[in-house]
Length: 413
Ligand SMILES: [Zn+2]
Ligand SMILES: [Zn+2]
Image 1 (spheres, helix red, strand yellow):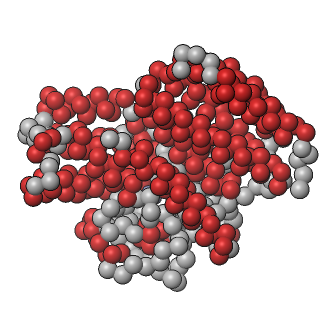
Image 2 (cartoon, helix red, strand yellow):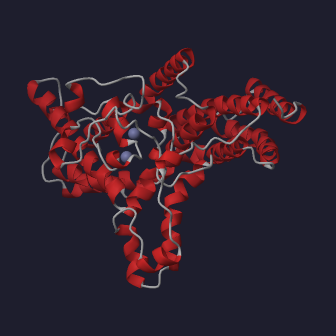
Image 3 (cartoon, helix red, strand yellow):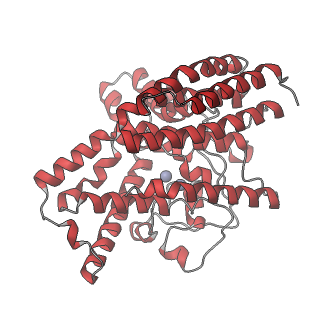
């Protein structure tokens, strides 16, 4: 049972509800460009994961079948007292591993390069929760190997992992204030807001997934303070809406320094040093100015209302397409979704360009629309074996309608 797939409709409903409250109260917690970028990162993470996570599953499987210390049967995890205690143990230990995965994800440069994506949003709402990295497949899985080594059944670990991730969804909101004693035990909106802050006093704090107890135990807990309102985002702002660049930005900083430094120890060592560390020679030659948070301005390039509406409409289509691809992946397997994913990724890229108001964005978008019918027919042929006339008609109408909208309606207020 895929818990995350089951949770998606609830995620979308909760998100719509939060958006409605934001509009009603005029709190300004949502901007369409920021929300689209966060959700684009989430869709990219999910869809690249169809392929990139195969290796981690294989390694976990080998560890469990060949090296597990105990043979813990799946049937032991039942509704008896012992079964429930085993589930709780698995969930708590997963959360403990998550704490260290997350903490080192901030403290070590190469791990931060992967995790930074989750922090780039300068807003904080439920779309931020879905803003996930696409490169966690490189190292994150290593932190959970001990649990497979102990011998917890794979189904149990996959379920508690999903539950851990689902739990973290609701804490990404500004509409829930302090929760008293809960703030001391669990990760709550208040103490996770702190985690997303770039204010000096909040940096590198509150790493917990479900329990904030780990932070209190290992000295990384800090409380949200009314005297120091949270400024969301990262110290080196993303400053664009390209979800691919969002995933590559920090790797690029590290690559630059590794290329420019003269000491080979630094070329290798930089990746595994504390986040922010730079080789002395490059730090002198290419100094970086400090951040003045008093001068902080959110990245928000202007866009005409017509173009904004077009991007929002296309993004809704993108969500539907990504759900259809997820369903195709679950029922048919990875080989059927690669080509549709290529179109999906092109779409995420062009929506970013459009949101940035780039002059050549419309030409890119037209090119993408040209690909929709051939790829749509290819997918239909593969999955349904026949060309369904209704779907073919919808695809054609979508392409024609989008092209007309993009080219005929003037790009002005
Ligand atoms: Zn984090
Ligand atoms: Zn978060």
